[in-house]
Image 1 (cartoon, rainbow, N blue to C red):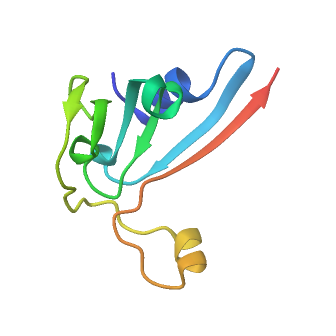
Image 2: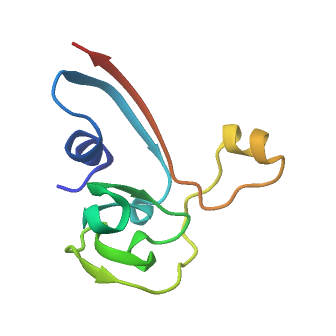
Length: 108
């Protein structure tokens, strides 16, 4: 299943790393992954965090919450992401539609 924990395990961390804790703050539709972007940005794949719906992000081969990977383009929508106290302290203003990963891991 598509979960924040699976997203981190499959796209962010490699061998020799144990995930201790994954905490995601945000709307489930604000996280996703991308693939086949070597020619565009030099990466085979990775994680997308959006302040709107990840399916609305411009780019190639995006995979969103319960959505297949395909080419998608458009404009973002408002989500139920809420706020994050750390981002508010940096921005010194209200934050809406936050998408934040907090990850604890151990290198073996």
